[in-house]
Image 1 (tube, rainbow, N blue to C red):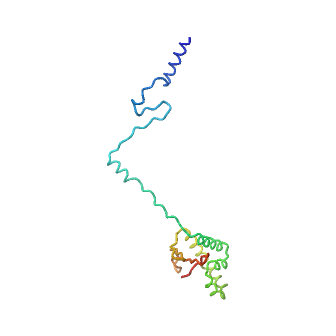
Image 2 (image 1 turned 135 degrees about the vertical axis):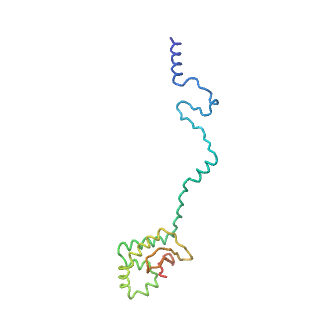
Image 3 (image 1 turned 30 degrees about the vertical axis):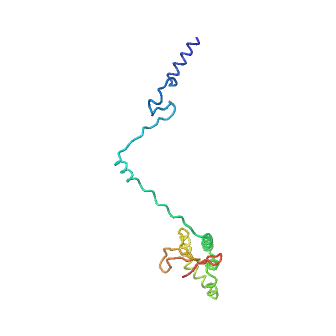
Length: 170
């Protein structure tokens, strides 16, 4: 009875593929029953390989990383926030160099009104645009080349004095 059950188990296991296997060296693409079958390597003629290499889409060029000095970026962001809050007087005091502020101090209120009417919105869009470009830095000056509407300069220049950055008009 014992021998019959062992024989029966042997027949079952052979039927399930667990029994005798051909040696693996006989077929290099042989895999056990539960693993994924390996694919045979494909060989292409050289001309076909070159043609395929030429038709591959080229990867998109990477955009250069925008590098803006930390203090300058903070100055620009604060100026944008002040313009958004409609604090035009504080915006001008923040961006203008001290000697230019002294020159216009007597007419500063009219200067602020004119800035609020015509230039604040445009300055905000230019400052926002500038954040996506890297400046050309020479000594303590940073120059951004920007597309501007007629009547406005095509560049924005900032100068660093001490730890502050000021917007230059020239």
